Image 1: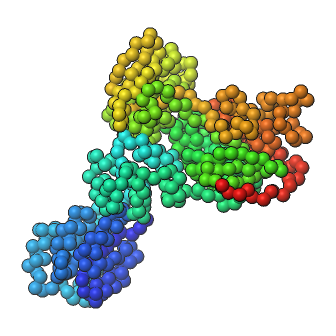
Image 2 (image 1 turned 180 degrees about the vertical axis):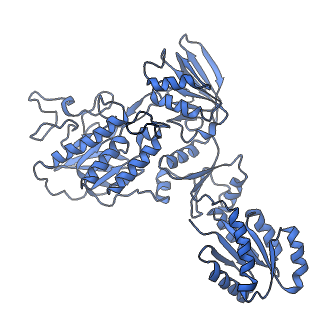
Image 3 (image 1 turned 90 degrees about the horizontal axis):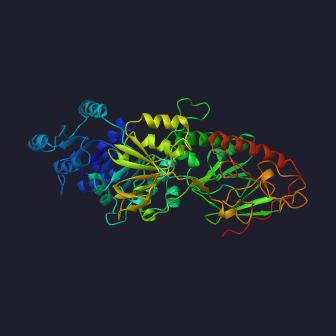
Length: 565
């Protein structure tokens, strides 16, 4: 945390040097003493402090400065940092001006020059003022700030990325927060497209891409090496478990994540049936714990980074990444999970992120306070989201295509939904269309009899199943018709009982795919149990099979690194 600022302003270099020296000698351990040779220079510094979100504790300004007097400067400074203490340095002839300034700029004190000895004439006065400032000081937010429109899809994308990667941020709505436009002007980006992201160092990024933003905020986006013992693709519960067990057992482990740690489970507002957490925990908390544990054992995590191609050569599995670089390992675990299925109705593509959201709405929950919102789906994820949103929204309507929730939702969630006063369940209902130009304004609901009703809506959260992201593996591994990865006994076999394409002398292990040394764990595996505990178990079990694979015939030396694209 940066120290609060004390700013001294004087146009005489010798006086400025002397007051700065005395201030630093006494206050440098607790404050950052800065200096400016004119009012204009000081105002530029204030702009930098505002952009970097720094706290200013005290201004000490000389009255007799050309172009801008000390009182004039303090009046400008007060508008930017109203809580900072204000002290005027004066000569005997300026006493009247100093007294008038007590009312004009709420001057806290004026000091006569010279102030020597400072132990008697300077420090006691400033100590008292700074103690008073400290008593009411609220530490400033030091994270990322985002300026944008409430219903902007780009703004939602940035906020969701930061939230899921556990990066603190502050949201400033350009339409309702007066500070937003002021910060845009200070950053010199008043005409730049939104969202505008202000980083902790005061620099600004206009409408940034996720990879560019990730690199600027310090996420690990480039692999340290080009060869590892184990590579895990996906950091949901299965992938994190694989990394923890692999790294803890001495394997040099790399995780690759296209969005954020936690996978689909990481978006869950509440997980209440996971062993060992009787009061439940959020998906974000589970992801945070898993990431910390994996890193503690030395696992390396790349995010956001996507694996886009797989090649196997001489027993090494070579991944091409979305930035064109390649990494290789003797063992690979695919734990990419599944992604939410998109709503296929008119208006859905246009309004995605601008009132239509996929996932558990952690990012948007506060934004729906006092509103009527809709949740589409009948599974546990939909039930958890409805309960979470009900804490903020005026009402939540759960739209269920089937006849009841009992067919697809856990009993404990159904009971809690029935107990909630502001949650309604509408069965036999589906969204037929979404309405709105720049943001969602209404939805058309179609009932089981074909009747369509249009109702106002500002937010809709969709949970209508999920599908695997395995197109990049289609020509490399055996997949079923839906894209799930086949493994072990499920593999399609030739007449001699060996899996198609299998070139090892042994039979595949239970979680091993059609390529020796490539394993699968979690929801992306065909016929897996879609539960967090099961995914964690498979992730750990896959590492056991990795060990058995590596104990086989000695691996040849890894081929030369492929040329980067």
